[in-house]
Image (tube, rainbow, N blue to C red; front, side, top):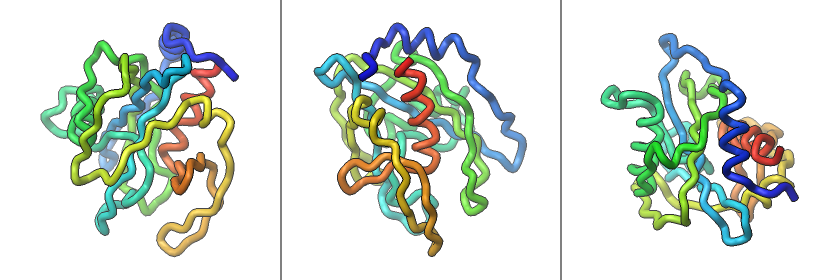
Length: 192
């Protein structure tokens, strides 16, 4: 099992310039926070949220990372990630908690909004209390060591289509789609 070392992770993220995509209209900008907290074993757990069920939300009911679209008042995407995390979970992140950034990505489905999503990695010193907004139905702290060994393919049904996609099964939850596309590279980087 690869040991977790925050200093090495910070260096690894700093040594690789993240891939960036220009947000040319109609693309809109969004940001998410991959929040790490110590789990008591010398490793970390990652924070996930379960989005509330809502008929107008294309990610309704899915497991995700805290985050959302950039507000015109946000000075940058880092501010977006911190604001959205505070709004959805009540966890207040600061620039001191920032470990690094991952590559920009966009949804691959034409049925999803045209977004560029920037993932930011944060580390907090202890598992914080979480108070969920109405946009969020639940939250999960999942150990990194568990995720490293549990990438698999499963069938998901979305908009009456069944797809076989990579993801992480944890109990009744399946982490897939854009969230899997953020978590998998993070796990690879954090395991080097």
